[in-house]
Image (tube, rainbow, N blue to C red; front, top):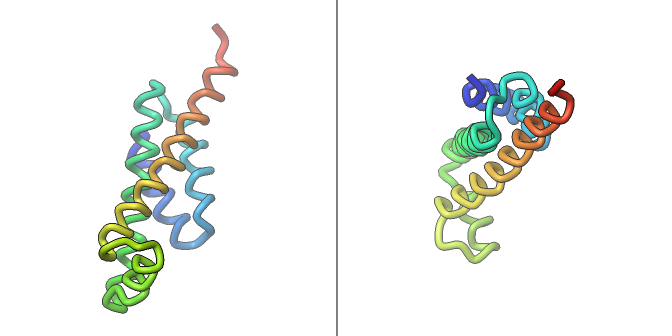
Length: 112
C-alpha cells in the first residue's frame, strides 16, 4: 500500500509543485502506512524514482530530448539516458530517506 501511495502522490506533486514536495508526501505516507524500515525505504526509493523518470520523460519526449542531451553534455555524461538514470538515483535516495525518516518518527511516538 505504501509504494502506490508514494508513487501517485509524488507524481502529482512533481507535476504541480517543486521537487521537494514529493519527499514530504513520502514522509507523511510512511508515517501512516509504514510497516517496516526496509519496506519504507524501498517504497520511497522506487516510488519517487519512478515518478521522476515519468515526469522527466513526459517533459523530454515532446522536444526530442534536446535539453536533456545538452544537460548530459554539461555533466560529461554520454547520453540523455544516463542523465535520466542519475536523476532517478538522486530522486530515489531523497525519497527513500524521506520515507525512512517518516517511519522512524512513527516509531518514536509509538507506545511501547
